Image (cartoon, rainbow, N blue to C red):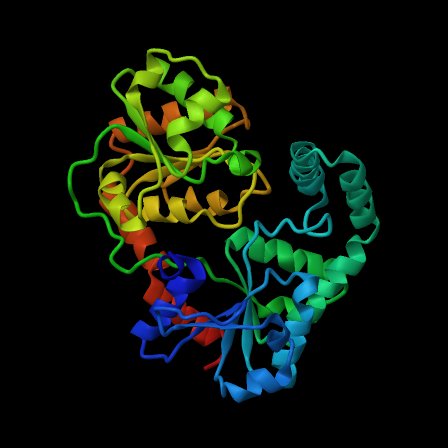
Length: 379
């Protein structure tokens, strides 16, 4: 699985460009089948001596610029290794980025997380502590940006918000280091031109531990409402735990649900024909960095629907260029209405799958994303 998505797929993209590449993971060395994979003790990652020993021309650091990983950034800088920090988040990392949306979307999400984990006392203490330490944490992020050659935000709005946080800290000098660098998708993820069908697809993890983020109850309620008004449409929900969702959520069967297939995990390559046939990709998440499944749907000519949340900025980009829409409210009614409008757009020939694919497949193609990363590293 590692080399089929995100950082692992990045390695494959760099290799396609003729760049000798390795994926370095913390952990005890083991016999790995893939020669691209290298595991080292975590302490080595904080050692300039270790990084010098590899004679690297550049490195992509998947650390979200989290302060706890700053020693790695410092070690890379001391070893004179040009590196790019990947910030896989919405960009709404603090109230300094956008105070209104932070209060409206991020804080409720954090509070739900505390309730979900049933750790109210320690969690609330941590939340209050983080609130008063917010400038210190932001300054710590800025220190990582200072060491880095460049910073990659996975959404365009994320770029703006990271820059806004830096401006609030008086670090305008660092804003020019931040660029949009999406997670890549395989180069051959392109719409085939086959006939589309009236299908809504949603691909995610649906196990209990993922419910807080993925919000499957809202997804199912929205689909029931939508399908109840669009009898000719069907839906497909794919991912770990999907087949048990209705039972675990205690949702009673109804006529609309007879037109929804719940399918457990499918390898990414096996998803291709499903994306190729579907018209709409739909997600109910409360927050994400970049939803890779959403990018995949666009590559195959689907339009997309999701909630309008500051913690879900990838869809603010995905819906541009006549590629989808956001719900007017983050409720079953708001999202089902968005699905109804999107279905009408398809039925009225306002969505052209070949056009959608031609726009987005090159945007996410692993070769193009890898090429952009090399440019950001000034190599």
